[in-house]
Length: 172
Picture 1 (tube, rainbow, N blue to C red):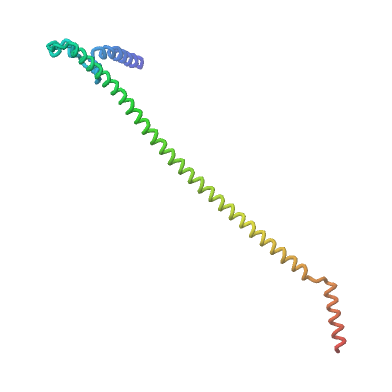
Picture 2: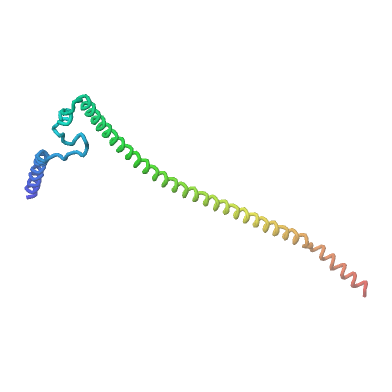
């Protein structure tokens, strides 16, 4: 059953694929929008009645050549205009891209500057904190030294007591 479904799908797919080239060959091609693709008038300019009635056939040939040159120049100018328009579009796209890049780079530069300023501020605060701690430590060390200098020895205290007793005995 499963193989039957697969083979049926394959045969339908094969039929569709074989009919696509036939349908393409039967379709009429679209006419192009340029001067070379336009249908001809079937009357050459040099053989038209307007030029054969004129006694100056040399002018008719010159006029035909001038028209042909004008057509060629028009085609060339259209190609150049298309190329210039495409180049202008590409330049506009490039300008927009460069403008976006400059905006992004300016934003990155500003954020880096702000980060640098923040780091400098943090470093200054750290240095200030360390110097304050050093001052506190130095003050505590001076206090310790002064307290050590004020502390008297037990012999000195005993001597002071004995002098006090002797002074009291003399005064009595």
